[in-house]
Each structure stands twice: as C-alpha cells, then as structure tokens.
Length: 95
Image (cartoon, rainbow, N blue to C red):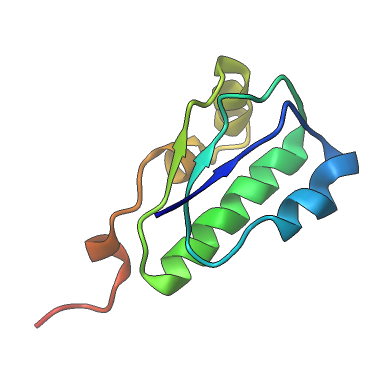
C-alpha cells in the first residue's frame, strides 16, 4: 500500500507538483500535515480517489484537519473523500 504525505502548503501554486506525486498504487493520502491549503487540494484528493477506483484499489484520506473537512462539506464532496473506498466496492460485479 502506498501513502502520499501532503505537505504543509497545498495551494494552487503547488497543485501541478502535487499532482505529479500521485503515482499508481497511492491508496492513502495523509493530510495530517496540511496547514495552508485551498480548493486545489480537494481536486487533488478527488483525482487520487478516481485513480484508485480505476485500478480497483482501496482509497482513504487520513488525518484530515477540520478545515479540510469543512471545505469538502461546503463543496458537497465530503462523503466521496472521507468514506473509504474498499476494493470489493470498486471491482466488476461478481457472479
């Protein structure tokens, strides 16, 4: 399992370099170090989730600070980001 540790600053200025850190196999994004961030971190987390789902792998965000939870709720994506994706929920329908 691969974990991506987000840096203290995750704003639009850092968005491209952060996106490049998303590698196949990233299953957990650790947001516990976030101090300064904007909506671009929401886009990054959504992309990480999409990538994991496309591979049929689990995905979770760990250590989200309260302000990140509030921002995700404001944009209506809190359930998408903070409800873990399990491998069995992302694969093809079983017989």
